[in-house]
Length: 87
Image (cartoon, rainbow, N blue to C red; front, side):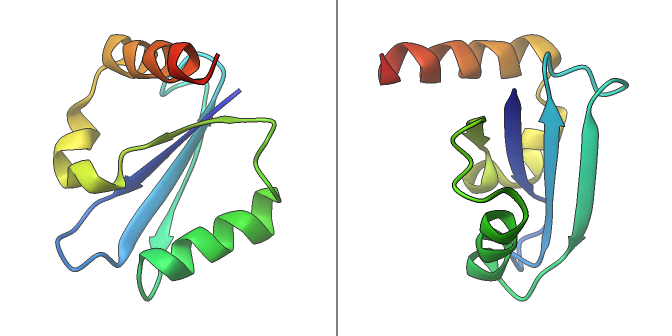
């Protein structure tokens, strides 16, 4: 299972996470909301998901709004790269 993290604005207050098995937007589960800052968003994730060991986390927060345009294929490639690096 994958958990993709996004930030949607320059002010770093509009975040979302996308939970998916295959990065299909129609099949996955997305939560978007406002948090005071990135630290508050990450604290929410820890509270919601615990240590997140059951997920491969794809952290796209640093990519900002550009990450919203990533395709399913691009997300899969990022996940593959991450899995390769952790093995």
